[in-house]
Length: 123
Image 1: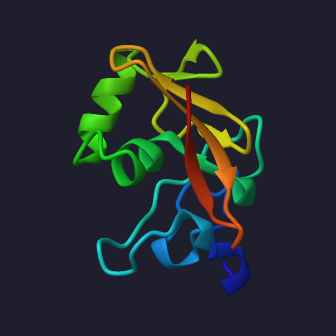
Image 2: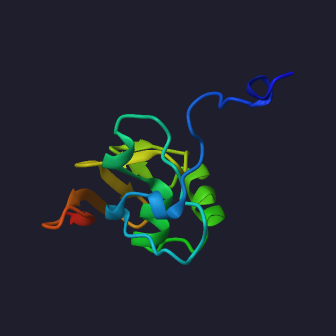
Image 3: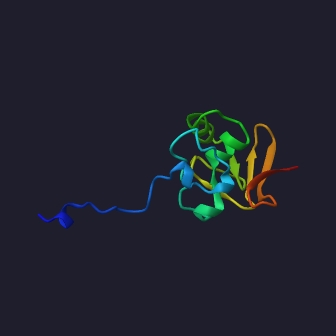
């Protein structure tokens, strides 16, 4: 066996995302952990979306932990564009409407003047 034969190659797409390499428009703190939730492939690109868990936990403050967010989503309490989404890593992107029917609140995901994601309340 030579050295080149023993080296394992990566298989498939990347599954992890370090917190420091997450998009800056998510506005995650550097010191609260090592990893950030990597959005699944879907209707928006990696750099142009935000996972639902970050929207619910960090922006809307509906949950304190990832587990609480996933329980909310599994209970079908959150809709994205009027469809219940159960994946915590579902990529919510520009102009998507995130609604919570139990509270009657609707938010549209937009960019502010500095290019960061902001949730704008829709009435």
